[in-house]
Length: 337
Ligand code: NAD
Ligand code: TYD
Image (cartoon, rainbow, N blue to C red):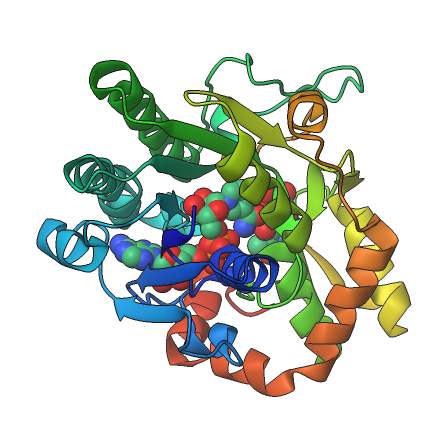
């Protein structure tokens, strides 16, 4: 698995994966195919030389562009590219269907046409919907699909297409499903980087509803290590749920960040709830632990500390991410807070 074709490698998780794969595997060569949407950022690839990394700007829904960039010697295609923000999918689902569904099908077809040995689809626990607050309920690989947002529905559709490519054409596929990632370089529309950037600037932190929704948080590099293992050792046709057994209520996350930055809780502002807001996500990661021997390296405390330090040390990255488009989105979505 030396020649990797990675889509969405200028985004938050994809860029962390590119760095990790290059560092861990000295023979690895990467083609990084990314459309550079508002969420794609070449700053995320700073410091990655051109020696074993080739960046190609392109759209995964553009068949000719994908075929041209893929070549005939790719060992594995790992699909990170997606529209990834639930709130944006509620405002308008079009791009989610185009990229997450049509784009995935284009990649599956192209992978088959070019003889790619393995196709990894990076998916999300959100395809399984929302869990009750009962502490004994967890997502497993056998949980039924029950996507609740247009984003989750588009990712579920993509999983079905991957499954169909395996079943009908015998393509070697692996699906990974992860919970909420946190770490450096996450676009500040997502909750943790939004609250961090706002808190650092003494701005209000918008909390949806009662703030008691539960998410299962994982440090981004731990997620990427699990994807590497699934790529190298996962069984064809299987799905692996990836989670660090780290459930937190949203308010608990905000309070930890405010405490670490020594900021007052008066910055918290409760705002109107997200329509259809999933109450709880919680992953049972037994399969990836026992089959692939994966364990997270970071605790919540160590991962959060690293993340907070990174945002505090990178005001210019935050500023550049919050460009004109971002400000328009923020004003439209949150109004005056
Ligand atoms: P992100 O929004 O930060 O990055 C997405 C990347 O995909 C960007 O670089 C963007 O330019 C690129 N992209 C978007 N549309 C494209 C297109 N049509 N063609 C080519 N490139 C395109 O997302 P992320 O948080 O890094 O998530 C990566 C993957 O992981 C996604 O598939 C997402 O569904 C999945 N995932 C994310 C999380 C999370 O907590 N962030 C959790 C579970 C699964
Ligand atoms: P988000 O980062 O959008 O991820 P997801 O919805 O995919 O889990 O949101 C994480 C949690 O934080 C979710 O319960 C919604 C909540 N949230 C807020 O309370 N305020 C915000 O401004 C945002 C963006 C999210």
